[in-house]
Length: 229
Length: 229
Image (cartoon, rainbow over the protein chains, first blue to last red):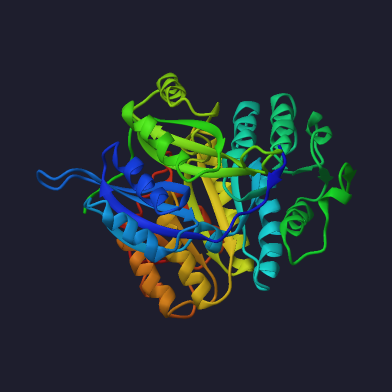
């Protein structure tokens, strides 16, 4: 299916509520009745029950098509015991995400390049995060590659290692089919045949990854597809 | 309120559905009726409408107290046009998160230490991610510090810069009141009076940050509170 890249502005609220199964559907329905499309929900804190009271959780909610005032009014109409506060959307704070997965030594060097380059773009109004995890083994890395498809705002994956192939290459094909491009270091294994771009220097790989997602850069990954540097 | 640190095992599904306001409340209600507590929802992809058909989105859902088979049955009972597939929970793949915010040069060095240390723990069965963003200015950094409280699985923040204070220090107090500790580099400004630990060397700051959240390390941040290295 053709993809839409982004939606209208999103509003975020934090809500402390009882930790019962019916609260989240109720909150989501209250917002939807006021016209909102709920886009994000995350349980960010869990609180012990106090005395005979119920256990509580704090949820962060993000939604489109309804402003903050309308949302608070909609939630108050529910008549539940909710403690509502304002917050910023994750997109506004953390922006686009470049994900770096692989061996610790190489992940650290890719991060060095990517963070330095993100600094230059964020100074000019971009918001680009560099999110990393060092992992070992085909199964762990393939699992992480597949899971990038579930990360909101993930725009590009860098595979940083010395040998990758097998199920990691299969997972790379799946992720690219979801519309997320991949840059790999030049390394042993089939992975370099299953990515958009191969870069030998990890610092440059990180730099190029950020350039590829920055609106403030002139770098078109689609014109580099299949190349090696 | 006293905090609970974690809940029971979580199950994750991906669902492609029509992009209408009532779908998310309906899906959440279907899961809740089968006993689930919905913990996470993220709109991970948006698809253009095809012909006269409706626009669609793909949502990733995570919930407790219901297994995958029960959840799929509950969703199928809704009688909606849903395309359901399995996926891994974010906690299983990305684990605990150390967040690094500040100036590009220092963020990159803290990331170097943190990724290298996370590598050592992840090899022994931990899952620790190092998520970074280079930012400039009091307002942007204070906003990011406050937003760490909305990040699922964020366990510790490292403030990496050369001068921080003012509203960043206020935001640091707020974040610590939410139960998330902070390590800061030794730097100019009031921030060093509003964090749990001050470390001069950025690589060591990153290393200590990961040690503080790793179950595989013997490092108790509470015993270091207020110290400077």
